[in-house]
Length: 328
Image (cartoon, rainbow, N blue to C red):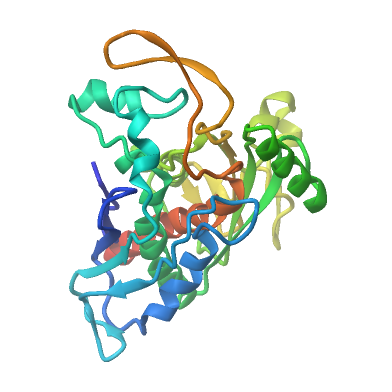
């Protein structure tokens, strides 16, 4: 499925080396002030070519709003947004037409569909997240009008936590023809209590699914997550007083429903699979071959995934707020 959400529904489209990427949003409430600049802020944080730490692909990522906005305000009808691909070097991927890149979705796309776009990964490329970020920027604006803010930060990269050490670690991996991953934390503040549903539509389940839907994410924890199994219940419970909670080990979600506290999520981001180092793989005929991936790739996806993670959390919370509004 390429569609996400029950109320604030988005459908993303496009491939890495296609004409364009983008999103269609259906279910956005009317009356929200919106223009391209509102969307561009988040897209600029995601786009490549901004530093030696990112892919050198030069894309302006200028968004165009095609529908659903009249005189600077959303109308309640579907909003289509498009970002055109300009800096395409498809010839860099000619050698991959019959070869599967280790760590990528090449082999699974071939197994599932019997066909794949080998140019930069096609639909499985991180460039697909442009549509998510564009839609997420709109969701963030809606949430902001309702007192909710979202911000993400890099916790660590390859075990390093200080900004200078993180930069050095990424550049060292790049120079070696390799890559590194890391951890990102996303926090939502001002979220009202009562979002999410018990059992199958738990808020934390929705968030986990949204984060795992980002191609490079391999793990998600809510609140203290994997620290909880090493504690006694007395230490892990968030005790309460007349003034509220004493702690927030649960990350703002209890029983699948928001508690009114900050919602805290951390995601594990894998190293970029496209690397120049020689690796063993196989081709579409089953032959074992060696590969060194050419093209322009991020030595670390972590810095550019920060706005993507913010966007995905915004989409979940906007969807849940609209669901809750139907019941009030």
